[in-house]
Amino acid sequence: MQIHISANDGVPIYLQIVNQVKYLVACGRLGPGEELPPIRALAEQLLVNPNTIARAYMELERDGIVAKRHGSGTYVSDAGSPLARKERMKILSERADALLAEAHHLNVDLESVIDLLKQRRKLLNKEPS
Image (cartoon, rainbow, N blue to C red; front, side):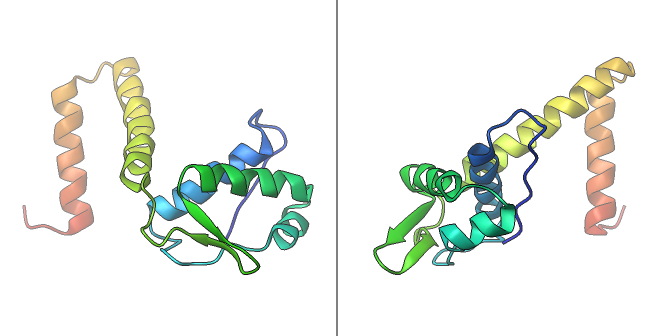
């Protein structure tokens, strides 16, 4: 599990961890039943206080993303993330907002943006024109 934190972005470290774990679950990089690193190990890896990791794990458990198994560790919820779709849509919404703002600044109308997205999708999926 790769997590990167930044002390300079103004977001509390525990929230950076929460957000990144949610993203990893939402995009399928962390699957149901998969174990998260132990609190101390992740704290050492990220060079943060173990309480910060414990707080992040507690938030994730409260949100139903992970489940603690007493004496065994912390695992991605067996049912998967109840927020997986919601998180994916949140990520896409943020990117859509940025795209629409950029299009507005460049005086590109919505229909042209939609056409561009369709063209890009065809290229990515290698669909015939």
